[in-house]
Image 1 (cartoon, rainbow, N blue to C red):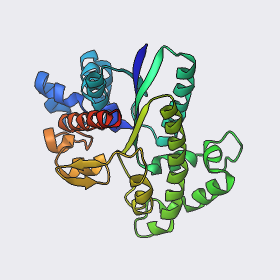
Image 2: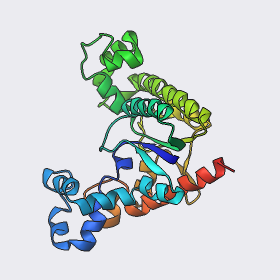
Image 3: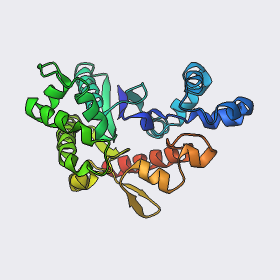
Length: 274
């Protein structure tokens, strides 16, 4: 029997940019060459092509550290980026797999929420698509998708953004509810589940905050006694981004932040299994 850590999230969970810590220590000449080009093709190509950089990222991201703390096997999404609803769909597929392949035993599921606007943009990438196979229709229904499509022009306008905040919150509630349903399935299988906010939609957060914080599966981000809206907010406020930590043109979490989060998640698991 193999105990599993299930883990899903966006680039924060993938460990985007952690490779630069290794790069700086071992290849300083090219580190200086690429340190300000993290969003450009050359550096990203190198980071996904060199085995030692890939290995470093996978070992030192929070899930890599956490699985070693727990002595679990890691099961989750392997690619960079993404949104919440696709991660939930992947989780559902893996739950069905585990139900059949009983040699695997889910023990801990950690879900990192990313900005719900990413889901909205994916739901509406085909604004004229309203057939039953359309993701926006499958998740939101025809009427709610039409409402979202009609409001899209407000997303990038902070001065008029209040006009779509409730719609954004409504989409969050749909996606969040589906995650909770899957957590309950996993809990019935003996798996402990938590979610935390990795990235949040700043403008609509006040409409979903109570639902998030009152949920039994929520793990707050508390650093030095202060609770933050998200891991991203904590990193930026506490100088734990790659940009602030090692001078990289990248706001993803640095190595120290991944270590901190792994420890928090480990403590949370011990608390849940007392």
